[in-house]
Image (cartoon, rainbow, N blue to C red; front, top):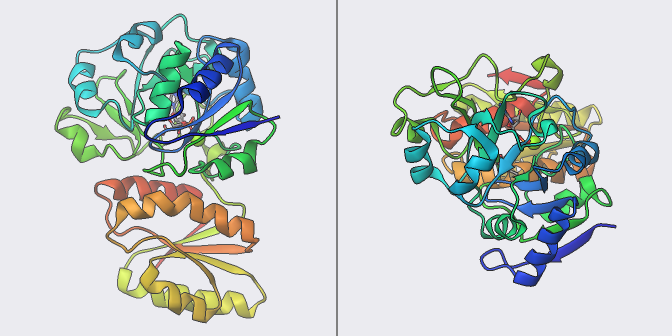
Length: 348
Ligand code: TXA
Ligand code: MG
């Protein structure tokens, strides 16, 4: 049985938090909100509990987990050492949506790091996550609380759709504010590398780390993965998604044309679009989930995964979406997630 406890996102009920924390200490699985997406947590020091995370998600054991801490002092229990640059990084970006990859500490369960020598660490900003980790008194290993390869959950309803009866407690604090996963920054190499773009952008990181680079070779899904190609479609809806890139002026007419063609051939078509494009797409026969206007990257990120899940729940056969125009700031993270969710990419 999964117990759902509704809590206030800004000041969660201490009783509910203590109950969930005790569950973590006993080796249970607790789903909790972070400012990015919901996480599926277990004690990072408890190998059996960590094994349950992989089983609940049906996640391959080769994909390592992020360890969540509430205080910088916990770093000594998690990492073997931390580079000097982590001090200004943490001062600027923690708590917040930045995950750093460090040398792994010996107390961390081996399954957390997929047997690797490095560990990903993050200090979330969400008051519920902070209260839970502090109350548990352990570091919390937590991937996003979705079944493997599904879009990350931004509400407790998304979590229940994927993991009901597979987790012990869900702390439901409403929608998560950012809506896409944290930036993953590898600090173990000769040069700092962004492995997964997120709300802490490359431009922001450059202010602290002038030599930081975006890893375009490994791709955002990283870790000791023998064949990243196995993870081709990730964050993906059940219905195949076609992503339209290229000239923004030509994009909407092309999507409208494709919606008409698909509808005429008997397909149920879903579309993710700016509110200003909703009517044209509806008139063509699509079920439209409005995200946000093109320039509103925060609004788009906050609604993206809920939109994909909503169209899946409606049972559409295909989903069409335009990519983001800006690849700076949060645009890089959004473009990354859209490309990973896509089965086809059409350049117009
Ligand atoms: O925002 C987030 O990061 C959310 C919330 C719950 O904190 N968590 C999350 O976890 O997205 P997950 O497991 O869905 O994604 C973690 C990513 C994966 O791409 C994984 O391969 C990478 O971080 N990762 C974990 N440990 C790593 C390591 N030691 N080295 C390189 N990449 C690592
Ligand atoms: Mg995930």
